[in-house]
Length: 351
Image 1 (cartoon, rainbow, N blue to C red):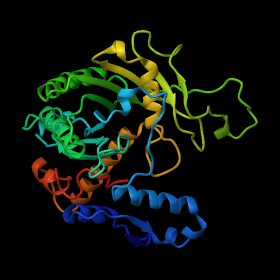
Image 2 (cartoon, rainbow, N blue to C red; image 1 turned 120 degrees about the horizontal axis):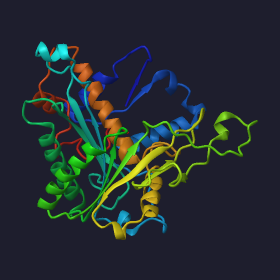
Image 3 (cartoon, rainbow, N blue to C red; image 1 turned 135 degrees about the horizontal axis):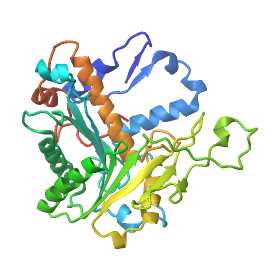
C-alpha cells in the first residue's frame, strides 16, 4: 500500500514494478488518506478495491429472474475490448513508418484464482498485438486465437471443468458488425476444437446519439433527477427491425442526460432456447458486479474490467516509451503483460 503526495506522479512506475516483481499494489493520494475518517464511502471503496485485488469477493449475483445457464458453474462469461492505433496516413505508408503504438487486446473472465465457486466475479488480462493492417507476423488474428485459447485454459485451471456455455460481450463502435462476424467464425473454430459448442455473442456500444428520457418528467427537478431510473430498457420503436437490439440505462448519472448502452444479440448457437428477455436481464445484472463501489455501471462488469485492463496496458506502454523508441510485440508482452500462471494471473490487479 503506497500513500503518496498528489505532486508525485509515479503511478505508472508503480504498476510497472508490480508486473516486474509480481506484487499487487494499491496507491492512495496522501491528501485523501488524511481525511478518510470523514469520508466513509471513499474508505469503503478503498477496502473493496483491496479485497478484490487480494482475491476476495465483495458481491454475488443471484436471482430467480436470471437464465439458469448464466449462473451455471460451467458458463464462461468473457468481456473483450480491442484498442487499435490510429490508421496510418499516406505519408506514413510512403515513408514506410511503423505504427506509433501496438494494438491492445484485453479481456475479463468469471474465474478467480483460488475461488472456483465464484461465478460472477471477474479477473482479466491483456496482450499487445500488431495492428490489423500490419503485414508482419504474428497477425492480430493469430494473437486473438492464442488469447482465446489462453482464456479457456485459465477458466479450466480455476474451475477445474471445461466450459459448456460461453457468453462473450464485445465492445464495438457503430458499424463494426462485419468485423465481429469475422471474429465469430474464428471463435467457433477455436471453441469447437476444444469441445465447446454453445456460444452467445452480445455487442455493446455507447458511440450512438440516442438518449432516453421521460416526456412527463418534472422539469423543475435537478437535471440528474430528470433521468430515467436505473434498469430502464427500450427494445422497440427506435431499434432496428432486422436486428436483436435493445437500449439499457443501467446507471444513474450524477449530472447531464444519461446515454444508454446499445446492445445487440449478434449470435447464438441455439436462438430458440435464449430469449431477448434473458439477455436483457443478464446484461442488467452484470452491471451490478463491478464490486468496488455500490453503484451500477453503464457497461456490464466484464466489459468494464476489460476496458480498465486496456487502459493499464496503454499507460504502461506510454511509460516505457519514455525510455526507448520503437516497440516490439514480443518484448512488450514479456515485460509489461501479466504472464500465464504467474503470481498476478487470474486476480483482479486493476480493481
